[in-house]
Image (cartoon, rainbow over all chains, first blue to last red; front, side, top):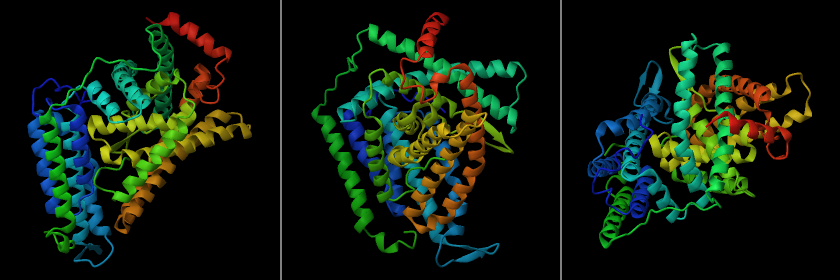
Length: 262
Length: 221
């Protein structure tokens, strides 16, 4: 699983050339609408569009795969739980438990939508530098404080991962083996405590360093955004397609077949 | 542990965002400049610590530590958890961007519950008061989050009732682990750097803070 989401931000692509503000806004609208779709065919259209965005982003597939697998691990159990627990008429019984196709349909649609959203999130945030995305978010009226804290937090994640790896190696080299027992849990508590103590001591220094460089609550940046007419055309196009999806979903030919698959 | 995209209804998702907005506004009041790096650094520690896996039988669970966030940051635990959730959603689709609101209310709400329980420690006097209440706070944060998650699932549709039950049952072993780890961590911090625990934090003229700042300056870099 890659934590540096902007590893491939330097790759020139249709999405990386796009003004990040418009990219986040229009694809954000797309993501929210896809998450609320109700029928499998329309969700599949959304999935196809999401794959299209991924193709346009030119991100390597194995970079995105980690995120998709992660989502699937959480959602695959639903395929078994939902059909067997859906209230209402059952098609047949499996080991005495009523099995409902509608439950399976709900599980499938959830998985399709979740994967589409994750893929699109990669297309949004994988195609510009992380700080640029965050500053774009600030232009989109995200509170200034939140954006600053996101930038700091992101930066320190890598510092603490390195710290954690070092501590982990130190523990294992002294013969520590993780297990489900009291010792492990106590040691993990101490482990987290040590990380915390170090981090708080670091904050003091970080804050002093920031003050000495003139920090007064603003985060100056050299990042500038220039939206060209083409950017707006892309954004409007995506919003229109999204509206079309929602309209098909609500009124379209698939609505009467809510209990069926098509 | 997190809700994924595409699972919840529009109403629940909206409620999540509205709840998050209200709680963020309420918990960020009177924020001082100094707290920006403090909350951020604490958030990254918890983000990283949540990558720790504890083996349970053939599988493993990862730490949540939202109770510990509540113990350390007090009210500011909510924005800290919001940050963590946003980053998890952006960086690896853990959770997902559409359910940032619901996930924040779920885990952040648990953290605030933990803070409430942690504050109760003054009313009792056991020999290991802090450790006991640290553990209780860690465990109650987990179970509070589990309850909020189950409520979100059931409000979405009654077909999720069984799923909600399974989710809640899954939280019980996690609750025990969280409680023990949080208790151990509080015990450790009490011995090494008690001013990190919330309650010490707002008295910035506490002598130990100045002392530790002075020692930390010379110890590193």
